[in-house]
Length: 219
Image (cartoon, rainbow, N blue to C red; front, side, top):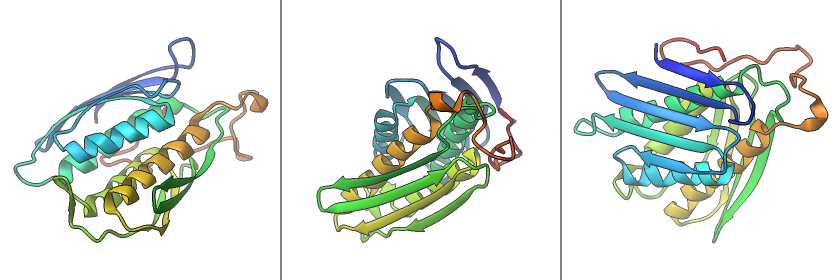
């Protein structure tokens, strides 16, 4: 299991950190859910860096994400473990999820592209992916890995996540629109709603954590 720590809400925000080293990747990640969208990202995959930076900036979640991965093999492990580690930090920083919005939805236009992202931080991980690409790569990144990135973060956080490309042609615009839509939806879902008075947003009184690779992490 990774080493992690969490700061409870307060002047420093809801912050979590994780460090993990395996034979495939060496990862250090920190998130601040109450940030300003500041980022410091280095995965070794330039296009993935660009997308995580977009996620950070438009969600207002501060993200530090440094990964050294086995890119001499392929990009799969780096992409997957990056999403898992960011997801682990998010779920740890959320704690018991008291007072959060829980749900988020965004329509995301990017020139000729329109994407729709809807999500629920439910503790029941699920990904519905209705998007496709006409290129095998963007920059040096395999486009088939974008779906896997979202699958991995949905599993790690425990998100019911629906992603749809409504229309569009340019592959760069498609995935950037999807990441920006995910960011805006996550901003709605993780922000504290003062009207809830700190209540957990479920009639059960409990929201579960995600299903994580190698076990579960309780916030």
